[in-house]
Length: 124
Image (cartoon, rainbow, N blue to C red; front, side):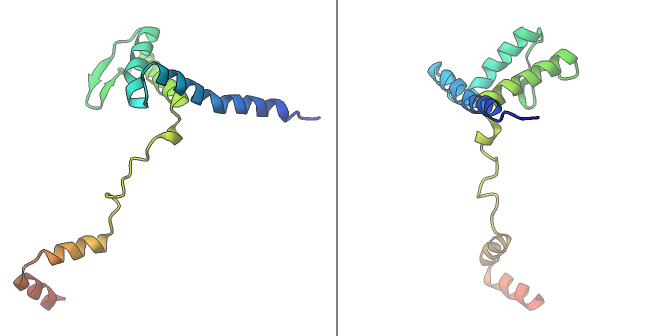
């Protein structure tokens, strides 16, 4: 059996450029980020699946205890992931949070008074 690798490659090339095309279309509408697009995606999914948008502790979304609510949630995630792929999202970890523990201890030690430093060093 001979496999034609050209045709799947063409599909992969089209899929790769699709998110760029969708993102460019959103930019032309004045929607430049995933965060700006989410309310529009929620409205779209609400109408499509017939479920109301609710505001919870984590912001607007759907009641995911119902099948329609879960389907609407997945639809929003799917379209946002297509337009704004997760690889393009910031990791959420800032360099400030990843500070050196030794540097933190040294900073705390330097903030001690002379008497506190003396007591601390005597106990070591």
